[in-house]
Image (tube, rainbow, N blue to C red; front, side, top):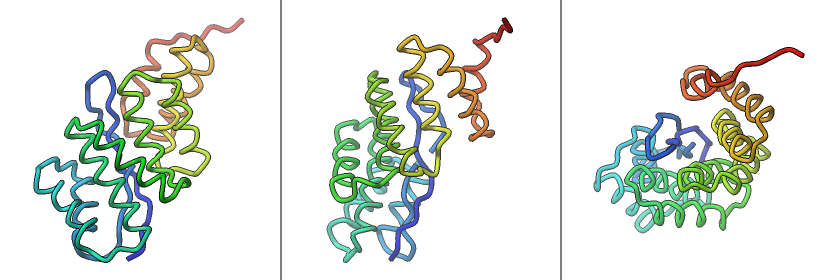
Length: 184
């Protein structure tokens, strides 16, 4: 099975789940594919988590599919509010492939949710540099970090870009409503 990147993250902000997603799809059958489908569907049942576990312990997977399954299981764990388990999965995926953009992006989402916007921004930038499939999410994370650090001009630019990159996602547009642009 080959792994293809597909955006399927859930952005957790201020304790509120926002339906935006960056997981990794596996092509083919078996538990790894079912784990991806569960992450994509935001299925947080114990059965979904077990499916991911089975994929990692009982299937002969390629290195790509192992990495993908860790990212997908991390998404399910993150949605289940198991931050420690999610970080372990993202870290394992990154240990195996430090160039995995969706692992960086998902870890950034979790880090932002935990209140560390500066570290989250660095991870989001890494995801952007590695060509994440969801650059709008990464731009949003950067916007929050810029706003937290007082760089309002950069925050506005990043929120604007996030809204353009993710036109179906309302959160960046909502944030932009707080801004007023004055010509000098």
